[in-house]
Length: 170
Image (tube, rainbow, N blue to C red; front, side):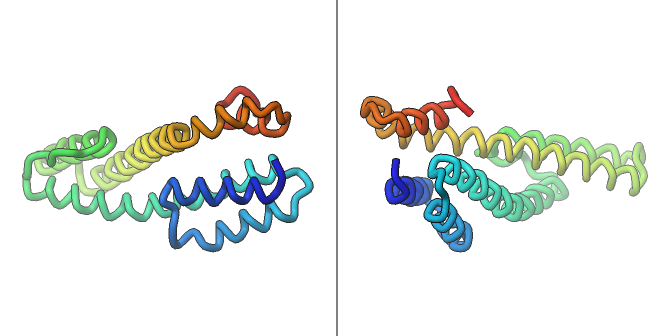
């Protein structure tokens, strides 16, 4: 795989994964890293790590908004909404229980606040793991036919890239 092919593959990945603003700086960094590297495969892997980090940052901002929405429903005593992810369901049910125990005077305000932070931390960890699993599955599904073709080409660099993507090589 030459540098142009790596850049094209990166651009295809970004388009396929619907990566748009505010990733402009990350994409520019990615392209520059590949262009300036003697080791295209290593640069490509490094770039995908950076992009995953940016995805995590944006995802965290969206999580806070979602948690606020769910907490309002808990405060109002609403039923758990349909269509929640597993991590959102766990968060919702945990918050319902926390509110019940707080208003039953089992926990004081400082204890409840500390427990709430633990619940939020657990939610973020679970939601991030869910999003990673979904993201990786989507990418693998979208690129499986391309990776199959790349492995059949006989090009050792292409075969190495395929092995890295499918987890057979680090």
